[in-house]
Image (cartoon, rainbow, N blue to C red):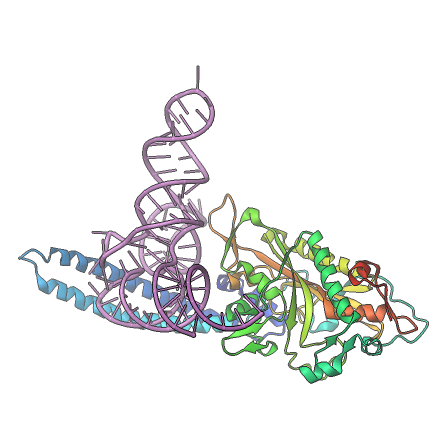
Amino acid sequence: MLDIRFIRENTALVKEALQNRNSTIDIDALLQLENSRRGLQQQADELRSRRNIISEEIGMMKRLQLKPDYNTDMVKDKTAEVNEIAEALKEAEDKLKSVEEKIASVTMIIPNIPHATVPVGKDETCNVEMRKWGEPRLFDFQPLNHWDIARALDIIDFDRAAKIAGARFAIMKGYGARLERALMNFMLDHNGARGYKEVLPPILVNRESMTGTGQLPKFAEELFRIADPEFYLVPTAEVPVTNIHAGEILKEDELPIYYTAYTPCFRREAGSYGKDTRGLIRQHQFNKVELVKFVKPEHSYDELEGLTADAEDILRQLGLPYRVMLLCTGDIGFSASKTYDIEVWLPGQTRYREISSCSNFEDFQARRAKIRFKRTDKKGTEFVHTLNGSGLAIGRTVAAIIENYQQKDGSITIPQVLRTYMGADVIK
RNA sequence: GGAGAGGUGGCCGAGCGGUCGAAGGCAGCCGCCUGCUAAGCGGUUGUGGGGGUAAUACUCCACCCAGGGUUCGAAUCCCUGCCUCUCCGCCA
C-alpha cells in the first residue's frame, strides 16, 4: 500500500509508475475522494468537539441539581442542542465511513512503485540479465526430462498422486522423498549459517495476514481457501513470516531481523492450464525454504543484494548453473519495488527456469501490516522495509538436480553437499 | 464439546457512566542533592489522523483487544467476534 500523502504530493510520479506497470487505476478520482475525506473528517471532528463541550456542561449542571434553585430548563435546552449535533455527527460519520471504504478499496489494489533502477518494459522479454554462473553441461547423450528419469527410477509418482488429489500433485518416493528432505535440511542449515533465524510458522493464515503481504484482496483466485472457519493456505512462507511482526513497533537496535522458514506452499495456478502440465515445475503443492528480512529503509537495497547472493550461493553449492534476471516494470510483482529472479538451467528443457525470486518491498507491506520501528534518538515511528526471496523452491531444485546430474545409464549423481544428508552418492 | 475467569500505556497494575489518555509502581529520559555507590527529591516519557508552522510551538479529534449498540456523555453498561487462562470431557 502506498501512503495517500505520498500519492497526493507525487501524483505525476505515481501515475507514471502505474503506467509502466500496465495499470489503469484512476489516481485523480482517488485524490478527489481523499479531498472529500479530509473535509468530512474536519466536519466530524468539529461536531464531536462541540458535543464534548456541551456534554461536559450538562454533567456540571447535573451535579448542581442537588440545589433547590437549579434550573431544569437549561439542561433540557442543552440536551436538545446536543441531540441536534448528534444527528449531524451521525450523518457526517456515515459519509466519512463510506468514503474511507471507497478509498481503501482503491489503495489496496494499487501496486508498489518500481525502484529507479528497474528497467521500464512491457513484459518479461524486457527483463535484464545481470549475471550468469556455471556452464551448462555438455551431454554426450540426449538429456531427458526430470519426470522421465524420475519415473524410470520410481522416485516420483505423478499418476497415483493424481488419483489421490488430482493434477499438479506428486508423490515423492524412496530417494525422491529423501532428496526433497535432504534439500530442505541443507537449505535451512545453509541459511542458518548465514544469520537467518529458523522459524516454522503456521501454513493456514487469516485474511489479515494475506492482506498484509498483498495477496489479498487482489489475488484471491490464486489462493486455496478454507471456508469455515475462514483460513487461507499459504502460497509462500513470506505470508506467515512477514506477518510475525504485524502491528508491532520494533526497536531500532532489533533491526535487521533475518528469518528463514520451510513451508509447503499452495497455489491454485488458475489461468495456467496449458503450462508446465508435466513434472515438478508447476504444482498445486510444493515445498520451499524462504528468506525474509526486516530492515531499516536506508539499508534495504544493500540487503536485497545480500539476500540474492545468499540464495545464489545455494545453487553454487549444489553446482547448478543459473543466471540472475532483473525484472522490468511490466513483469515485477504487485507488492515489490525491485525483484531479481534467479533462474536455474534445466537441460531437459534446454532453458533457464525461475527457482528463486528476491524482492525488496520497501514499506509497501510494512504499511499494510503496520510493521514499524522507532529510532533511538527520534520521536515518532517509521515503517520498516521488508524483503524476501526463495532460498530455494525445493521442487524445482529437485527437478534441476535430476536433469543436471543425470547419467547416461539413467542414474543420478548426488551433489557433494547433499551426500551426508542423503546417505547416498547416487540414485540408480 | 461443556463450565468459568480475563483482555487497560514499554512492563506490572488501579479504575464509581461525567472532572480519565487514564491513579500507583517499575523501567526510561532530564534536572537537583549526596565527596564514590545505593538511596532521596522535582520534572518528564504512547500511537494515529486533521488544522497550523519554514520547522518547532500550538490546537482539535480518535485510540483502554476488535466491531456494533445504549446514553447528552462509555475504559466503565449491553450484544457479537477474536485471543488468553482454569476446570471437566474427548482425541492425539
